[in-house]
Image 1 (spheres, rainbow, N blue to C red):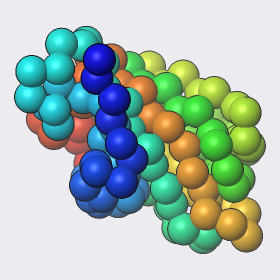
Image 2: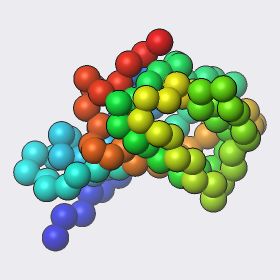
Image 3: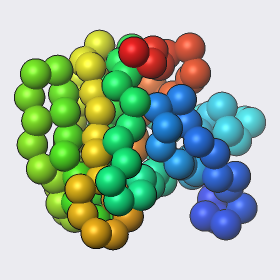
Image 4: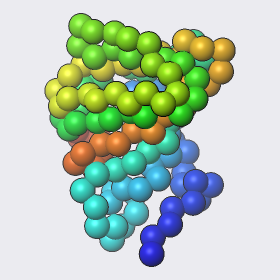
Length: 120
């Protein structure tokens, strides 16, 4: 049985400027046999991630706070309980628009790799 403990996962700043912990990922946990990766991400109020493109598909699941999600030419506010699908190759960016930290899960399939992310 594989259990990933939140406090055991290193907190990093990703290429897009979002603070995250890779909870489950074949690159972060050697020997883990899974196709996708799961990360816990957070963004302080008023901050915006860097505009970027992923070569892979991604899903954000909002846990806390409020955000303004931009995918290509579309934008929409997102709140706890919302899921956002981001297709491969789409320009994406999220802004924390609430008074509290924006917290979300990011699922990337296939699993996130630095070379699959392009910062614009």
